Amino acid sequence: MEVRPNQAARGPAVWMLAVGLTLSYACLYYIFAALILSWEADLGWDRTVLASGPFLSIVIAAALAPFAGRLVDLGKGPEAMVAGAVIGAGALSLLAISHTPAAYLSAWALIGLAQSVALYETCFAFLIRRLGPHARAAIVRVTLVAGFASTLAFPAGATLSASIGWRGAVWVAAAVMAFVLVPLFAIAGRMLRRVEGAPDTREADKGALVRALRSGSFWILAIVLSLVSLNHWMLINYAVPIFVAQGASQPFAVLAASTVGPAQVAGRLVLMRYEARIGTATATRITFLTMVVGTLALFLAGLEPLLIFAFTIIQGGAIGIMTILRPVLISEVMGPAGYGAIAGTIQIPALLAGALAPLLGAVMLDGYGVTGLLGLSLLVLAASIAMLTLLLRRTG
Image (cartoon, rainbow, N blue to C red; front, side, top):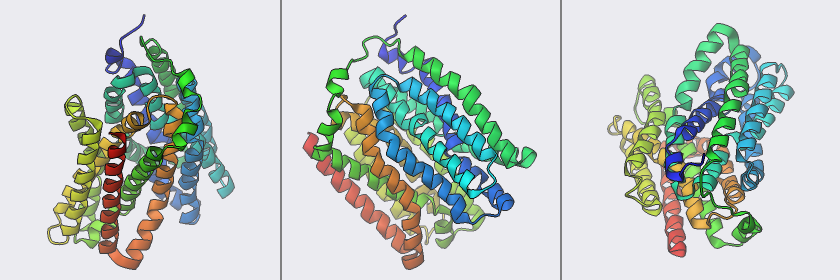
């Protein structure tokens, strides 16, 4: 029985994807941060070796993003996500039995393969292909729930590693991928394939990526998304030391940093409330401007530490909203044809920017201090606003 796109966007299949993405991010993305202290204590490896794992996974996921998107364009979105869950289960199993850096890094390489098809981008591409203009409502719901992935991962990782060891915790994550995510993705995909009137763009998809790569709008949008990613991760990776340098105590700084995740969810709730009244372009402009206000608040936190909370709430809310606006903006600027391959390719610079952000942040903090880092943040945001303005003028 077919269902209408507007009904499907708010139906059980979307909520199943939301739960699936929450667990997928907890198991494949946040597991490093959740278990890093246990790994350092048990394995005794250099921190750079441990950190090389997630960096490797991000690079591999970025390299494979266009191919993952192409699978969605070919109508294989659910199959790709199911495959990602299966690969993720195998990768986590290898991680659980790793006793050497080579095995550890091999596991993370496989995790990168799983991430390329089992996280937001593949899910968003599938929703846009099936639901068309109603996809934004579905994406809001998915990210609304998945925003709690870190909230789930950190206490679960701490509790499980304390009771059954970090290897046991990783085995639990592997089991979740195999026995919870595989059926969730399969059933949700089958339900969404019943949506009536889903556009058939197979003919238009041919050559769409090549045409996009020749478009100035493609490269401007890629720069915009990369700058936003660079700014966010440059600040968030060093949030606690920045807050302490601005006069906060360490417990206060940790408490403030912990509000970023809930602020993301709050931002998505606001967008959900006003999704029918505000266009994507306007919402993106407002979001970028609020990021500037957030960084300025962090500048002034040296005078009033409570302004740290203004930064975490604004930055968290803004990046939470951008998670929703990003796929919709790509679709509106580049069109629906070849969306999966185009979205996957356009995300490569943003993913690499996010991976390099901690290094740049460390260089700025060591060389120029918090003032230099926040000054760079304002420059990056000014450049992103200028590029966004240029993009919107080109696209009318």
